[in-house]
Length: 492
Image (cartoon, rainbow, N blue to C red; front, side):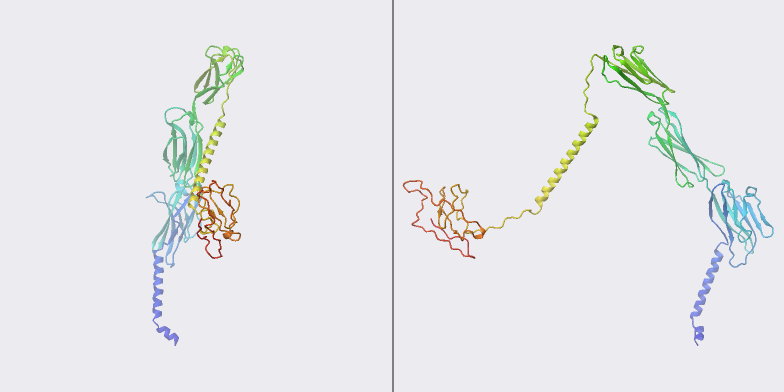
């Protein structure tokens, strides 16, 4: 029953349609795909070997292969057979240029891959593997062989003479390269360069570059660098070149200290010369004539054994090299007595003092900045000390009339309760309202007893500040906890 139902189900026709579609796509793919499979591009170097693969892919097995040929195309429009294979007649290599250098790797039509040995730069080009088939006709695939050549790099300096015209001072060359190389100059001397290329018959390229500048004596010994970049090199080829600039001698005389006094011994002058090529001769002469008898010359050094008036003259040093000669002179003055030379501060001491002053100024500036910033932070921030607690306004230990001046030396004795203190300046009298028990209220110390009575200042008793104790009585202080500390009014 289930099998009959499945046969009648419409799903099976749909699955069959999918299978047909896949088969059509695969067939189209086989039709569109190349039947001759080869590598698209290969790279090789001279004297090496390269393998050119070729394989015929016939999915259905309906194509009949009759012969396969390898055709070389060194340039457009030119074709040469270099290898042929026939299953009956065997192998053939008709091109003389490839004779003994080409072999078939497999003696088969389905895989007629070849190897080319001892490659030459002229072997570059297109290699086509072509089948003669039935019934579809010829089938082919092409591989492009790119021949690479590493450059032969060289560089050298050119010896020149100092002058005012721009000349070639260095050369760099990358010869027989494929592809062509590029040449760069790394030079701090401020010159310029020019580059030229030459193509060879085998497709290689030679690149030459020349570096030019106006040579000066200061350029002698300086270094310029030639750098060659090319595809076959793992890293750039770098070659440093030292410039060689020839120039006349530059002469200077040292040793004279302006202190040639009569009787001085072994006063010396030294003739220094900078030249390229090296100096050949150094000659000392005197402007006044022959050298004095006390003068001895050793190479570039002139020594006066004992100074006298005879060396009060001008000495001339002449230096020669292959390019010519140059001279310099110095006049020596003989004095009667030795001159006391005051040695000034050394250069190192002066530099140290300047550096020390600069460091001190920097420290002062930094310290001032930090001080100002700290002051600003203290002014803007919260107070760093705790303010005193508030004091009650009506404390019983405070006097009703607080004197504006501190007590004098005579005001040191404490007052008894109810005693009156008379101000010596004419102010109102002050009465002590605290007793021994109430005087220490609010945590205060017992009151200080002042002078009980004021001295009489007048014998007649009519002083304006005298107090009549019979007319007024001082109320006693009676303060209990929780009541006000303000004393009642007092009448004097």
